[in-house]
Image 1 (cartoon, one colour):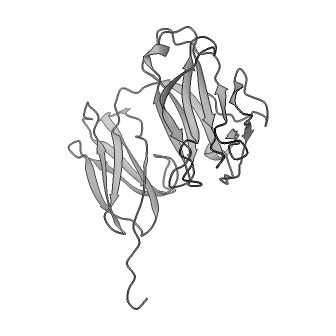
Image 2 (image 1 turned 90 degrees about the horizontal axis):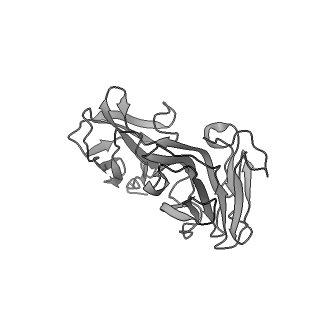
Length: 274
């Protein structure tokens, strides 16, 4: 894993390196950033990766390449990291990060997963989990590339990279939320192929990681196995929220949190006279 806690501004962590792909964009390791304003790295300490997209040209790109990884005897792997979404410049739909892998020390790169855009309707850190393709399994040498792509709009932040074996308890997918009015929303999801025998734990937050405690927590509750949606009447008008849930297969056997879904409630109706 790499948390970027003790790196210097312009010096890559040990065995990591940068490779320019197009133009001359820059990466720094900082504890804060601008455009969007971020006063601390993920978790509140140490450094993070700061891709200076704002000062690059549209279409410029740069790879941040991991150390060599040995996956001999390993399968079912995924890469995880914290990614900062921001609501600046919603037209910048190709600004973000594309994951890649190489089996030949960077001579050839192949994409995996979809483009992770910097833009979203709120400012927040989100934990990304991307399955590594079968081609990288059981290999004596694999390199991963974090390919940053600029739209010359707003800067990109990344933190806390790790590669792990995918949990066996599967999580729900395709989370969605429909705001019915200013205080109600219908939250829904697609259950995993193997239904969790003990249901789900669901959280709604305004900030903070799922499972991180009371700060920013709006709702936490257990949902029966048979349910794939729930109606909540707990919200404030015209506010941003996000929710997620994790499967509970048995005591001590839980999935990761599903990728959070961000939504906002509608405006409260004005009373006459205004």
